[in-house]
Amino acid sequence: MITISEFVRDYISYLIESRRFFHQYPELGFEEIKTSSKISGLLKEWDYKVIDSIAKTGIIACINENGSGKPISIRIDMDGLPIEEKTNLDFESKIKGKMHACGHDMHIAIGLGLAKLFSDNLDFFNFPINFIFQPAEELLSGASKMIEENNFDLLKSKAIFGLHVWNQLEVGEIAINDGPIMASIDAFEVEVEGEGGHGSSPELAIDPIITLAEIVLASQTIISRNVSAKDEAVLSITSINAGDTVNVIPQKGKLLGSIRTYDANIRELIKNRFEEIVFNVSNGMNCKAKVKWLQNAPTLVNDKSLTEKIQSSINKLPYKNVENFKLMGSEDASYFWEKTPGLYMFIGAHIEGENLKYSHHHSQFMVDEKALEIGLITMLSSILTFEDMDWEY
Image 1 (cartoon, helix red, strand yellow):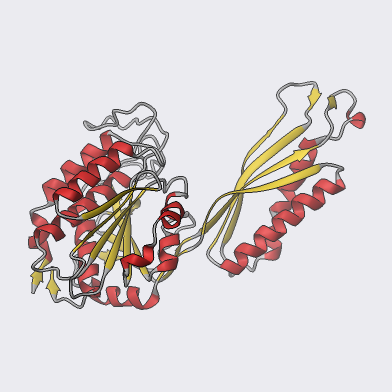
Image 2 (spheres, one colour):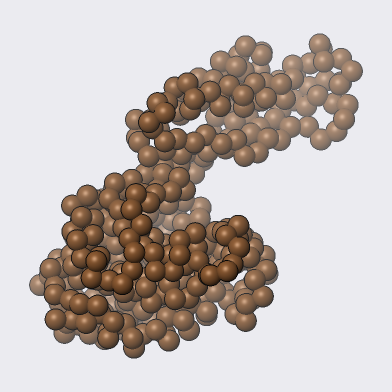
């Protein structure tokens, strides 16, 4: 029987060292060149078969391809954010205007720790293992581009595993739940064109600002009047831009926003109703309108049978599973989850006594490094449970 805590004990210092290194050198989506090179070099050193430069900076690494167990994949994201760090950590970002403000540095460390652990102990882990180091999660673009450029069916994975540290959950709390766990997203840009004119004579112009305002107000009725109260959905307008002076009615204006939900049918209903409102309101105001759909990702859904199997062993760990946990945030790992039965888990990382308002994507975002060990243990125990291997904490 494998004692997980004994295995992991030898890797804790590596987890912390690795996390702090990557935290100092964040790179944005599709720009993770040094990050990718460092990861690729380590994986090759550990005897992984590595395919790199997928979607520019993505990596697939395989080991034990002829193992007798069930092939698995482990997905890790790598990119940082365009945020100036203000944490005053000893290992604060050295790259001006860029920061690992979401925890992907923690994910890299856990992924590499797991990869090293498997490589060091192949006699114990006789199953094919694939690591997917994905770029540009923050752009919601990396997963789909990796899939476009590489035939993932060749991995022959029977299950895919992923995780996210979460500083709104306490250290020692984990969330392993089946069904939808993160929402779909459809980001949009609406451009409205009218007829510019002088602010003193609005009757001689066609005002796109009024049209945009009507679209904003009308679109807020979609959730309240077209979606059942039993279904969860959000439509947010996050930017309006039109004109730049006090006495000119502009020719054009635009707004930005996003739609999020857990249900594919509700997703299409909201998108269709949104377009109807944009075009009908614009026509009624004698304006022209364009709707451009930007970033998108489907709902991230944990496989029911896989999750139930893993949940059955969670009580062997000294952690608390947070039931019915899910987020309206989005994650493009969902594209991988559509291809392979998957389990995506959240690992509590809140630093005791820190202000919870400094959440993900904040310049003062911080996490408790104890989550590194917990993440590695939880991920490893989940994989061993899937492989029907006996283990204890």
